[in-house]
Image (cartoon, rainbow, N blue to C red; front, side, top):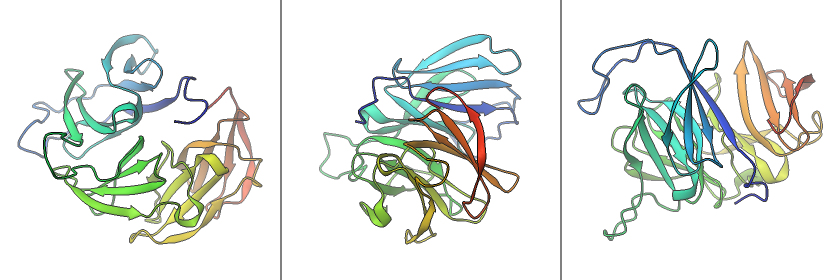
Length: 250
């Protein structure tokens, strides 16, 4: 675990669109606009739910060390549970854990989650597979997006200098996988075959320190520089445009 794991580590997910059921079970029976904000509380072992328009608390879901939260094609929320090496599914209407979509059953011989150790991010790729960042092994692993079956290592350990892939791991509009490398202050990019493309952002850009999350918006990228309390703004080529916001431990 990172040396700052005792501090709260938060990821945000806003569910505002209609949920569309695409799988036999479990699914959302009625499409519904929820207008809720989901915040992962690593230290509190819970996904906290708030009303989006005013922040009023609406409850919480118990998850061990939640990190990234993404909405799957089945309408369920996929939460990386770092402390127990799982990706769990949460029903956004009942606010209950449905199941562990990715986990290793100790009673079976086969290794259902491969070398997964400390998942910080789980994101669906353009091919429909689920890509999971393994923080402790410095890898990105690939799982079947419908069954959760382990498909193998996508980005090999330490490829391109990867050291601590964190919660902001996601595909960009260019089809590349963007991975914040927490321990060496970089954001790295990989292609659709898991090959290293380049160092998209280095520590030299805006004094990037311990990146956790990143967001693409209107052709620009916003990167959380957690150690020095900044949100950095960069263009599509990774050039530093300025400090967008100063805030404690983003």
